Length: 105
Image 1 (cartoon, rainbow, N blue to C red):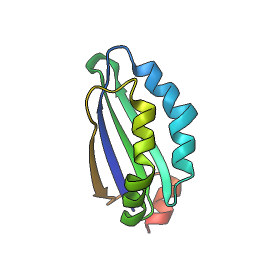
Image 2: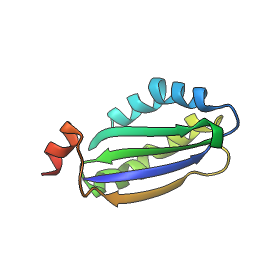
Image 3: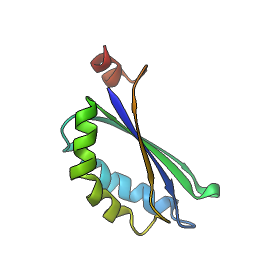
């Protein structure tokens, strides 16, 4: 299993808008992507920063999403972002998420 880590610099006072976009637009889009498993998003409003982790069945699924669906996500987030997000991909070593852990074994 693989994860994409997305580090976002947010415009001031945009944490609520990010949360709304995640729930109404981004999560439904991610759920349609091949190999998508989970999304975890952390927001620090006082630092105007967010970190999002998406879990994928394979590295190829994560890379395919990066080439196909990610541009649409960036458009959705354009009203809350300052600058470009930093994206990194990692292999998942351990997970305690029930669905994810079962798939990783």
